[in-house]
Length: 385
Image (cartoon, rainbow, N blue to C red; front, side, top):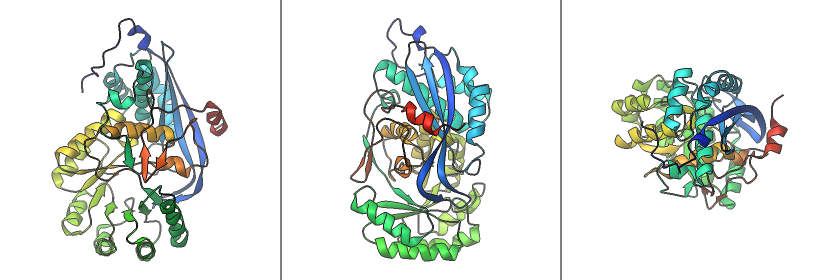
């Protein structure tokens, strides 16, 4: 991809040089335990990137993980180490109006490390946007939408608690779509749990199910028809990411659409899934795609193949969620909305003014760059010693 075509005012080019990139690990408690098929968390860990330009502008970015290197190979400890030792040194002196060149340099400095690269690229777009006085979404092509339908994830494993939680979200008009995390319990226990949820919320809310690769093909063949009968709207990554052939076979027989997540990190992955006919939709995440530019590339391949777009998350704070919203804002279609409820599951946020959630939508923040400001007092409070 060529460098951005942003017109930089005369005299600013030398001032756009990146002069420092710092990283900090933070651990922020969550309001309740969040259970996935392979782990559970009571605190969410991030690497916060602070990037400074010669002109004094500062940009921020965020890399999120879930319970260490269990969802992908990256942990916050590895992310920070690779930023400090390899990625940051490769970018010092580069102009911030060259985000594609920054991506090429980072790729040359370290393979994969997608979450680390995404955090740095986000900070570059934030600093550049602040310099020019424009939102990051404008640097990516402009805004199609300034708010996105947003779901809430039910992940305690206790159906009574989950029904109460969902009722509260519906009453507050915050969320009317709920993604249910399954796979930590037996399939029969999860199906019984889903029957209770569907009976309690039927007609008032939409249910999505995420197995996080927990099932084999035989289990999925048995369970997917039950989910379809319960009215589940979408099932995310029911089988392991490597088993694209199983997704193809399941999709041919399932009466419920399938969402690809862990099997799509790169645009090449998206092309392979599309060519195989393995999914109806794809979950877009900065931590998978290496940044805003990579996310848009994956989205373009999916759009060309007629595959629906879904805004996925990894429980980002308002920093990471804002970055995703700027990437989503310019997509022509985002049929499945997004799940950037992360700021609401934290006991505290890392910005001075958190994102706005109302009428079942999360709003694109106003202002230059990401439109959010790092609260350095909270950064110090939650920083890991």
